[in-house]
Length: 232
Image 1: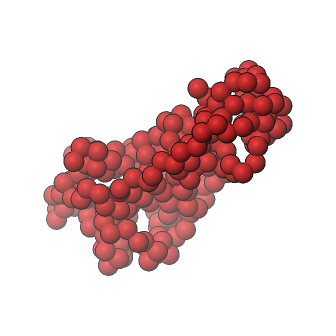
Image 2: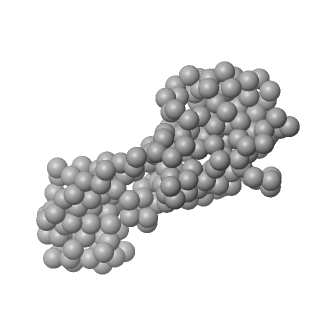
Image 3: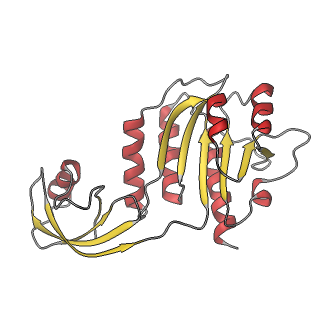
């Protein structure tokens, strides 16, 4: 059954983009059953009442609320110069399950901004693909020094390996907790940025022996945190 993103469940028609997809791509007809997710935990069963590529009508037949997970994953990352790689990362992290992705600008960053409208669409598509009721939050890029004081998560990790850092992320994560993982740019964090993160309560962690690309590190970190929470 097709799942559609419907941010406002008080209206009785799909958005124009979703209406076009329902009529032109899926060829749905009046009386067909569909599912709706508002991105805020509500998952609904519905039936199409009128097919129109601009405003396809529906009637909700059942509504349920999916509670938030007993833990949260917040990925903060300095995006790569190649935006295709960041789009891939956002898609995969959203499918795996993440509450928030923030973009930060570091001294060695090669990208000053990200296309938020495009990334939001990718996130919505990933939410639908993985059949989730909660839409991950995306936060636009800010300088690292402005981002760090805004952190509220109890567990704070920075992916940074040096001679004083033998601990792997998966061994440091406490189940059922709120975590934020900070991943640096391709040129890595500067010493000043590392010290600033440590002063804001972050702990250094390793993501394994292999040298990972920025976007791979982001996905790997989200998987590691999710795995700890799903297997304990």
